[in-house]
Amino acid sequence: MIFNKNSKTLVLAVLLTALSCNNKPKKVAQAATEVKTETKQPNILLVLCDDLGYSDVGFNGSTDIKTPELDKLANAGTIFTSAYVAHPFCGPSRAALLTGKYPHTIGSQFNLPANGESLGKGIDTKEQFIAKTLQESGYYTGAIGKWHLGATEEFHPNQRGFTDFYGFLGGGHNYFPEQYQAQYQKQKKLRKK
Picture 1 (spheres, rainbow, N blue to C red):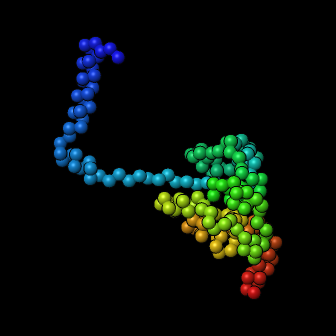
Picture 2: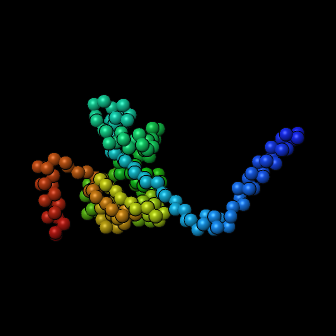
Picture 3: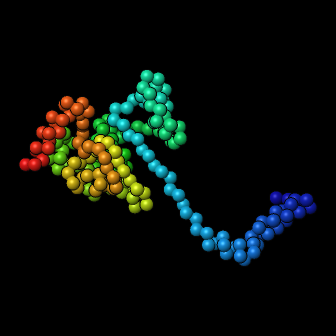
């Protein structure tokens, strides 16, 4: 680079200005070093729905299904417009999302049976879920809804990094009270045996 008299003066002026900004009085410099900066971690909310079609939400064009709260979240956050699941079944797909691994590499190629609780099956406890990684990074974690990754104690969401869990552990849930109550009472009796 060739410097002429004006450019040399400009460079010198910029350098002097930069250097003068660093020569603060000692009191101010000490106060600046005593200020603790706290890094605020972003909130993370991941909404995962079984069998939700791309255009089943307002922010993707649905006019017949009203989703105002999801629309607000989408407009204020990040949406995945070109994301694909790792597996066509819900359980293996959820396992892949939460572990970061392909389902077939962790023995999760199939949905767990409906009576997974009595069979004692689930995602290997050696596999670390993203919730555990987030906890180790100072996050408070929670899961709401369907789990379907193991229902016995060692596979429970609270053992996999979720501080709070509110939902059901199995693969399905009947939402009609007259049908649900009968099934619930039946399961309750089985647990007492």
